[in-house]
Image 1 (cartoon, rainbow, N blue to C red):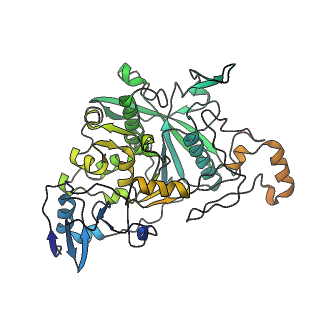
Image 2: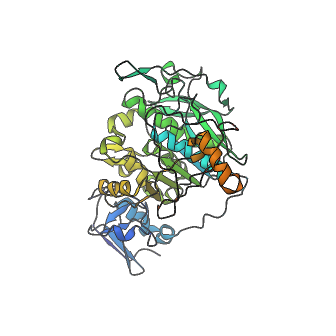
Image 3: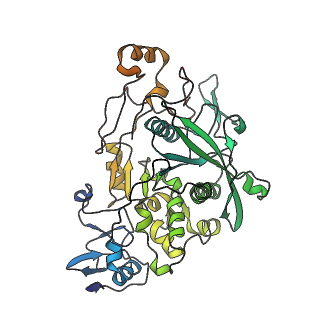
Length: 444
């Protein structure tokens, strides 16, 4: 059944207002906080209800970000409005992939720089305790971040990081390829297991390009955390997002239902999912909602300077034709550049900040987005010292070593011992009596 009525003509994929996006479903509890916006039923991006590019179907008005989305809706409105049941994932399969540019796994592995990586590591340790069927994805960083020491005057001195991956991780057999500046770059992965308090393992895949078949310049792309220029950073984000999705498929993770992006560095992961889901469709018939419903995005940075953005010329040279340029610009353009936060927001059905106030600030920075909040916490067993552990063992039931902490769906906090968010190189995995494995949990 075609749509009833159309308004306003424009070129496909063009938009007369700023492109912003997150799912605003009628049942979305954030919807009332964003008056003047409606969800584009094709791509899911919020659009202003004052705009004229629209259509009606069964007596209900709909608004669109572009004529490309509007025309797709007109051709088959029932498909655009369908909300399929995701079903249940088998219990023996990993159903969640967690992408993060840095993850604090072990104090001997310089694969993190500060709060973002510490939070990622604590989240995965909590998942191991809770037996959440999740798999982590990050980069190996043979050169690490950096080591630091203080001089006699208290100033920071940065020193090269040195570590031996084979002492902590084991190589996996599959390899995949990604395109960087038109060159095929092979990517492999190493595996690290986080073992929870009940023995449940959470695998973390650390992607690596240091392979003999790669160009010498490409062998170091996964070498240093937050090193190099914009080109180096974008290449790393290609490896993380595009390479990560492809490696998960090659490694047999066939049951994945959710992709969690820990900050905008991983925004190319859902873009790769979009590409894979639309390979047999013409450009003007691409569907985005199928991918969007599978993605969750956590944003951390409350200042504009903290959000990765790249000139379009650099993007075209480095990323190449992963998806049609008009689609990428529609999803990621912000102030004339590719903004990775905008891209992640436009391709995620649920978005959260890391504190109530942070979510408020983020909604101001990106008007129209449904940004919820889940307050940051820590994996308390990792951070609790031995004397306190002994005290809790004596006085808490069931042999718990620390009080559990939790976040409700509305983001309020349960009991905790306070928040510790170390800067730079924090000792992320304080050794417990049974090694670095996690114990009690802080869910997010």
